[in-house]
Every structure is written in structure tokens, then in C-alpha cells.
Amino acid sequence: MKVLRALVPDSGRIAWEFPMKGATEKNYSGALATAGGLVFFGETNGGFLGVDARTGKLLWKFEGNQQIKGSPMTYLVGGRQYVAIASGPNILSFSLPEE
Image 1 (cartoon, rainbow, N blue to C red):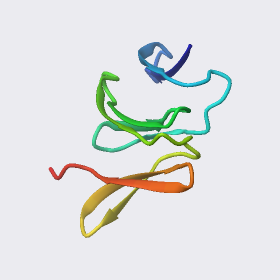
Image 2: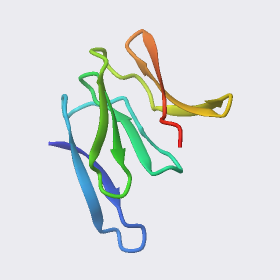
Image 3: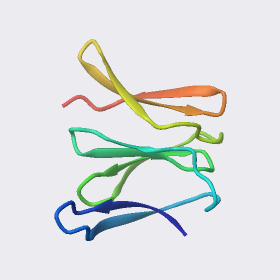
Image 4: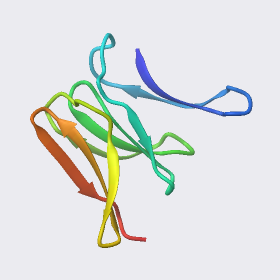
């Protein structure tokens, strides 16, 4: 089974695990943690997910239906934060909720 795992830095204890879909022998996506407490990552089968950094609870998912090819990144335009990732031949970009 493949999981995204958060560790407690002081002890190395597992804080939470999130099971990931797709083939266990490969995954081309990294993870991105934001200052706002979100973690974004891609799954081998094309899912792009956002979880709560403290709990690992799923907050959002988009099925891209293309293999994720890279790590997510974030950027600002006009004071609005976006998160983007390469999915197959496409770049997917999503705005984060305004605070």
C-alpha cells in the first residue's frame, strides 16, 4: 500500500497517513505544504488532492484522469494564491479560497 505520511519532527512519530491510489511501484508527484495548513499532492492514477496538514483529512480532490508528472507549486496573482500541477500534457491550476 502506498501512503502520504506526516511525521512529528521532534520524535519521528507518524502523525497521520493518507492512503494513495495507483500503482505502488511508481509515483511522479511530490507534495507541497502551504503556510495556510494545506498539503497538496498527486496520485499516479491522476487524482490531485488537498488535505489538512494537521490531521490528514481529505479537503479537496480533482480527478485529472492523466498521470501526474511533477510536484505541485503555488503562486500569487493579484494577491490571490493558486496551486498548479502537471497532469499528462496539461497544467492544472486552481485558486485557493480567499480568507
